[in-house]
Image (cartoon, rainbow, N blue to C red; front, side, top):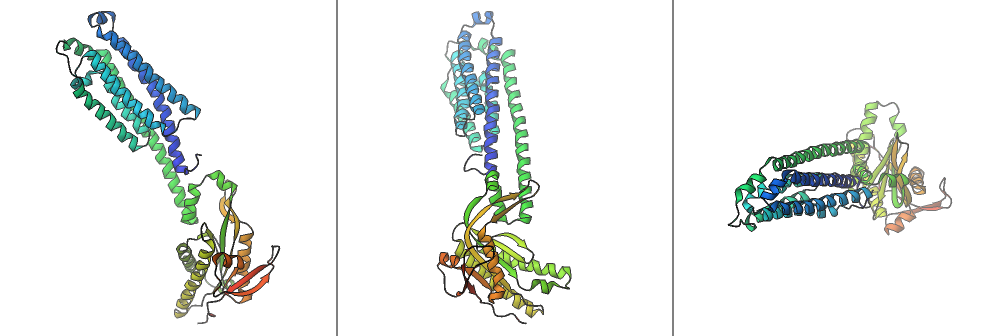
Amino acid sequence: MTAGLSPQEELLRRAQIDAERVVALLRMLVALALWGGVILAIDEFTLEAQPYLKTQIIIANVMMGSYFLLGAVSFLAVRAGVFRRWMIWFVATADCGFLILNTWLSLKNTSVPGDMLFLMPAVWLAPLVLAFSVLRFNPRIQAYSVALIVAGLASLCFVVKIPGDVDMLPRIETALAAPPNLIRLFMVFLAGMVLVFAAFRTNALLRVSIAATKEKAYLTRYLPRKLVEDLTAADPEELRNGQLCEAAILFADIRGFTRWAEGRAPEEIGAFITEFRERVEHVTKAHGGVIDKYIGDAAMVLFMDGSVAERGLACGNALLREITLWSELRCEQGYTPVRIGIGLHQGEVLAGVVGTEERLEYTVLGDTVNIASRLQEQCKQAEVDFITSETVLDSAAVQEGWHFLRSEKLRGRVGEIRLYGLSTVPENRC
């Protein structure tokens, strides 16, 4: 995968490069067809009757040989993997230039005026050159080719004039004979085949795009939209390898949920959890967080990139306020109040995709995650609503409102962590 490109951009890049391989083969085929048509159109008698045709054969040999060489070089460059997208502009210009130059030389040599340029078989290469542009999936190159061809052929109408002493009738008859007409038909046929091929390629890319869109929509049902966007834009191999990054991890859990849920109808429990998650999602999104997962009545929220500590603290405080308002509303409606516990810690995590091909999961791993979970578990014992570590407060340069709880060695960790608590929510009683 090319560095700096998303999978979608990489797909388009490969399609454009592969299209140049097809175009290169068509160039060589066209060069041989035009050269063969010129040879078939001229016999010894015609050469004696119209000597200018000898020069026409020389022009045809040089032009067709050059065009064949352009196709061969392009094909080998694509096959060797050295063809770059910027080169498409060069070969597109060469296609248009070949068409215009070949038409001009034919007009000059045959003494046919520019306003009769469509008598020249070479000009019928125009539909094919424009069809080449369709394969490139780049409207700018398409517009560029159209402008170049129209401007070039229009200029020939005014630049090339007929000499007064030339008998035009035999030359027109030669230009409209069966072999030149066969060349014209062959050019139209090739242009049509290129357009058919382009339609197949467009259809294939459209199917891939639709499949990717469906997959993204499916993932969005189960993963946060921001996380889905990051996953679909990243290199799959890099995601599997994982990457170390600085993050703040927030855990929020409903206190006393298990006891509350005992004996209640599944519908009531489901509605309660849905309301809780809606509030968590609203607050998390407002503070630039990503919900990594829900674990029953608990939520795990990630803050990555930028001021993770500040956003984590702000999100935790906002979530406490949101749940307090919800609890008051429930009390007014005659339901039981709600209270949560929040744990927040900051540090290095390993972020990436883990699992088998049948079941892949994007997650973050590391000591930071474990500590954040442990802090949330400490809320009930410490009789506070929000516990964070000194690491977070130092990173955010915040102390006001927080009080030191204790230094504690948490389960599963070597060394002690200084814990700070915040309790802004009074005991909920209806």
